[in-house]
Image (cartoon, rainbow, N blue to C red):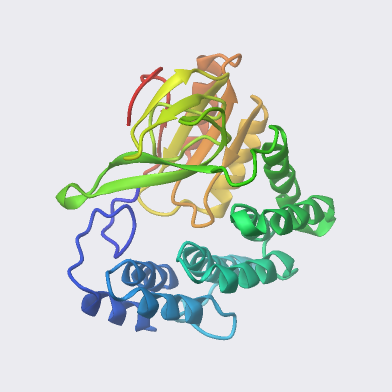
Length: 323
């Protein structure tokens, strides 16, 4: 959970007017993630959607939106500097994909990212998965994921791509025109503004959905649960699935190394660790057949080596809860 004020995280900071946000998005002395957040927030201000979208396009484009130079790093850490820059670009693209009227441009940029062999495998997988989550581009994204899963050069991204494909194909495809994502209420931000998390799901009945992925912010559910979802995002677990949902976050973004370490540790349980491209949190899905003591040992050992990180059982105290 990010505790530092930023223009656009979970909405904990109230920003009055696009006039305050736009300069942040244009300030080349600021870190890339701050500029992307400011541009995305500008796009959500009534009457300024196109201003924000234009800034996101500039930041997402490989030839624009260059970030300020960091303190010179040792040669062995130069890859990390490139990873962070590429991550900022991808975050801008993913933010653009959520804006109505800009999906076509975002899809083209996501495709380019997924095909770019110079990007880290995790980022390429994330781009392909985001593309697959767009209703009109599901098949294109799935094809890119399949290609990544077979490419040895992608490294750990191969297993991530395979896992994403498995989750997409393990359940029957929903009928054409039905929702494949649901919006759940995660809580409320400043001034009581609701904060939502969008998750993949398979329609079961008119108001029932089986979660296809565990949440990173919402409490009380996990992949495999059947939920009754109201229009305001509140939900009820009507059928509990077979999984635990373990959530983890730090004071800011988690490092790529910490994510890789948890992913490898969770695989031993066995379990599957996932995270958004900006690594603001990690969610681990583990079968309920795995005992909680084993989960606690893995998570405590992982968290002990990372300053400021916390983890908790996302669905342990809420067997049938509303958000």
